[in-house]
Length: 194
Image 1 (cartoon, one colour):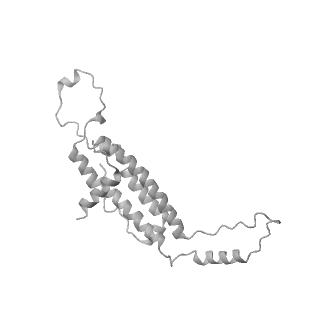
Image 2 (spheres, rainbow, N blue to C red):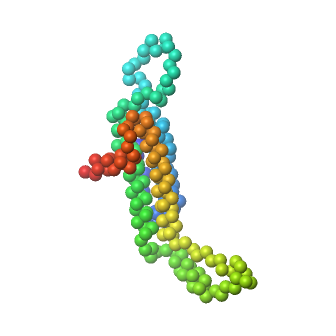
């Protein structure tokens, strides 16, 4: 079973957020260790030899899948409390922090002067669309905060999809009462905020 480690959580700095490759790699790695392998993680909770071997079990054909065995509720709860929800919370913390960075002013933007120069040049340009219909095209450079905000928006959408899929499997395998993953995560946050 996957265990979150303290090395998974990156140091939350604006530089980390603006390094979009590092941010995406962290999110991808976190998702792959927990959510993408959720079936394997849940199957690892099944203890097949709880009752020992029964010689009469070979007398009849077993049609049930071994993955259909009930998972011990305490093992499921332990997985959710110690692995799944902490992983989700870490990713939420990173996305929230980087969203804050994306909406803050960026005094260290390396492309600020270049964008201002391009903008000034664009304002001075005379456009005659009869002579050149494409001369009015101008694609200003996107500030890195805008680019980060778009990335965070996309990653939050991905999180929604992945968490819904993961939670559907958890509720199925753990015989969890039907609740949304948001409600379950919020309940876990309340219980573990003390």
